[in-house]
Image 1 (cartoon, helix red, strand yellow):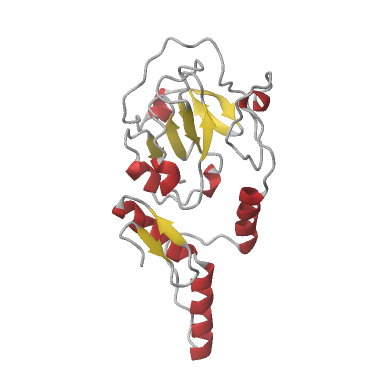
Image 2 (cartoon, rainbow, N blue to C red):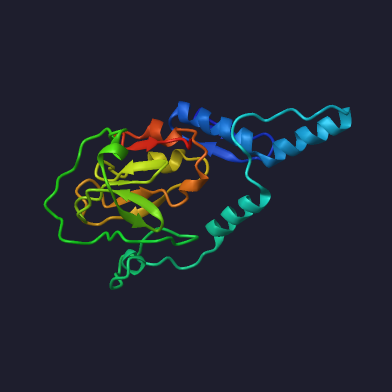
Length: 226
């Protein structure tokens, strides 16, 4: 039997788990919306009864092609480039943890002479987009300045936004996200933590707010499109 911090889908057998009951409930709701087996059963039952299928409300369901693409990326097993290789500098013995399916434009470096900085306290400023300037991009993800690596990294993202100068790398956002938006990004030399949750699959966000709700230092802000 699953514990109060676990949920097993009766249709597909997927196991979800989280120590926060509210986050687990959010993950359950989203899984029930996305579960292909559940939707197939609903369509089959409706076809047998000759009635229109029940609508599955809320978020759009990804196609099988999109799901297979996500699965193949996770299982590809290809070697991961170092951070220095992604920004065009000399290789390092410490590899990054980002299995990037696509590499977008990168103008932000994670190395530099900015070492005279201290950890910044949260929460993230929700109006930062009107107060900060775009400092560049990292693998296609927008970065809002000021940026002075490695000690000052700014706020990253457009819809899925994380203040890297506040983040302490507790991992709650990565564990809570039901669609795997984040991957760890190594940021050696930063005063708050030496790795950050990089929103490499920002466009996959379904705006469930789970990551924002569970972040202890409150460094995450989600902006819905439109």
